Image (cartoon, rainbow, N blue to C red):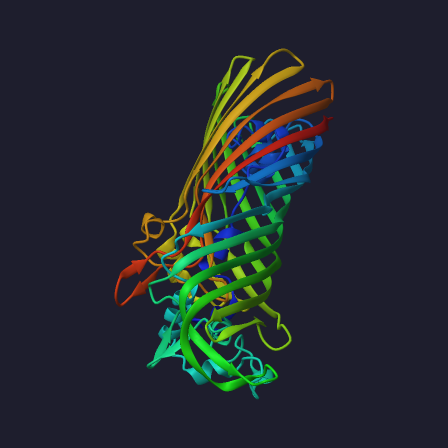
Length: 539
């Protein structure tokens, strides 16, 4: 059975939300981070349990370690005078590898490993504004409402005060979506002819402001098994249990001059009457979207490392998608204030009667990943390693909780996204028997197609949130050092993450006169710094 999933589209994950849930950071042990994660052909580090599980076969002795991080985050919107900053402390990685000696020439060791790894931190906050806006989010909502052929009766069915409002549930019934109902009840939609228009009609003047505040994490618990064949071929396989928690607050507001809207009449006591008129005046309004996503998933990893000669290592690994079972809690609030020669009126509306929160369950399959690696060992002093990773972002899938695919979402994912390519390069120089110096660099391409970034292909959002965001590029510059004394080791890493992304308040709006406006958007730049400390023992 294949579904288009009308209930899901009422207030569920869009393609860009699936993208958000499928991202990973450069995280792990300090040695791994200081070499930018270029460990696919090296092994011998607990972080390889989450990268190339064949690396566990390189171990000749047991290993236990813990890693702590201190993150200094900074996000700045282009045109703003200051950045939004946060400082976060994380338990980043805990792991153990047990080496079992088999006393066999064919397979000297069989190793088993367990680890906890924080693979993604969602913490991010940024604010911004846009002057001289050319269109309004209300125009976009009007276009969506017209595309659904919803009537004024459809939109008034669920709004506050309607006799049938207490029975309205757009998540499971074939009624108009919350976004259209909230906008209509907040005077952001004007009935014109057989459809609706927004407040500007393509002639908006004024400014907009926005705020995005995200938090949460993706944690992975890995169990790996691996060994080696004649100290030449190393193999490994692993299973990951993944825990995801994501919370977001997104606000978008506009202040418009010469806005066109319906002004109701009021009686002497201030009660709203059923009469009124269309007028031109000032309009201030805002939309707030709250989202809380929680769930668990699992994945499998397979890998091999080949050492044809001692100076050369070749690695290959692939990761299945993480098969998530997720639950969303979602709520939207709109507020408005209109001012003209007839006076001022304002109000606030929430999704559903008494601030209805929806709970929706669904499945997400993250992208496939393939990692190819090569590393060279330079005498007894140096290591140089290179990784290439292909991530099939356009292979993501969204399904209902019975695993029936959402065909519309699959089409959007294929249209909007492309595979990402990551290059990681890292090096280590052993100063003496105790000290080592390390450095690395990583670069990841954008997962979004150029036609989307350039506005050639218009995006369709789902649910009550019109905003979406994506990375244009993501890079890491890293360095660190290590200290060894007998069984004890201590590693430190410094990681600088420079992330360039775009925030779009809503997709493009096309007018019958005046062409297309590509929505209100802004560039966001993150400069995040991290200091990491790992302490461990080999025995």
